[in-house]
Amino acid sequence: MRIALVTTSYPLREGQAAGHFVAAEARRLSVSHEVVVIAPGVHSEELLGSPRELRIAGGGAFGPPGVLARLQQRPLRAAGVLRFALAARRSLVREGPFDRVIAHWLLPCAWPIASDLGGALEAVAHGSDVRFLAGLPRLVRRHITAVWLRSGLTIRCVSPELVEELLACTSEALRPQLRVEPAELELPCRPERAGARRQLGIAPAEKLIVLVARLVPEKRVAAALSAVAHLPAVTVVVVGGGPLQQELCARFSAVRFTGDLPRPLALAWIAAADVVVSASLREGSPTALREARLLGVPVVACAAGDLPQRALEDRGVWLV
Image (cartoon, rainbow, N blue to C red; front, side):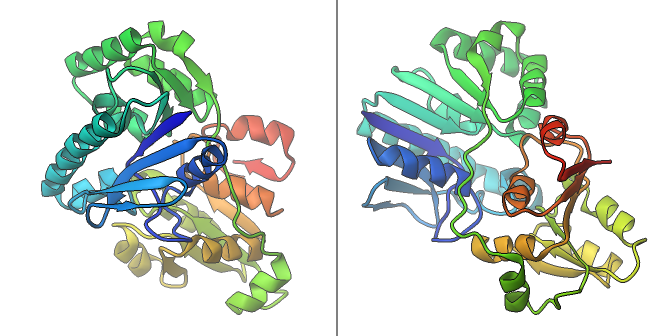
């Protein structure tokens, strides 16, 4: 089977955190199928291998801390999104036909890039793309919904909550085409607590709280830091970068901000933690919290996305 995977987030190098769950799916599928990944790159190029990658220059619009944050920083980057969408669609047509096309992110991957090209089309809705769709004018949303209904697009939502958000901004008629399926999670390494603490210079008895997030308003990192600031004798580390980093550093001078890290190093910080904290109120199936639980680290978070269900099944997930 020939499969195309179209995404706006895919690791540019080994160990990069951005889009690692998309890469995990691509690697799994490439074991038994011919997979072509179409994704943004620093410049346009073809990378041979399994899966084969077609990189398309995105004009600086793609990459951490996410497309929306990068467009807010520099609105002219929208031209790069348009160029990527046009080139990605041309690549799909040129490389096709495909038996199956998978679009990671509804916009612009499921629409307009992969729309109406024939073959089985499925999309993965992660959260921020649903909220972006909800903010579009009603006529545009109605048009997109009509295209998806006509094509029989299958949509994987990473949480039940996201299903309802998507239906609220499209149409109830889409419900039969939606299913709940968390994004794939692949750990390249499983650092253990003692080794991770040695690596990072954290004393064995030191109390360590870790936050892993893009530093954008919707992640509510300031709210989390304001809460943990009341705890005595703790070390607090924030893993991740974004437009709020300078402001947060100035406001919370006792907190260590690492910026964006390679994924193995980010996993080491999670493994070294006594608890991983999140104050985000809008999530699908939050990757960092899932990683923490796989590494045996407790999680304290707000009831968002699929966390209420996970808390029923896992005593290490504490909701506040």
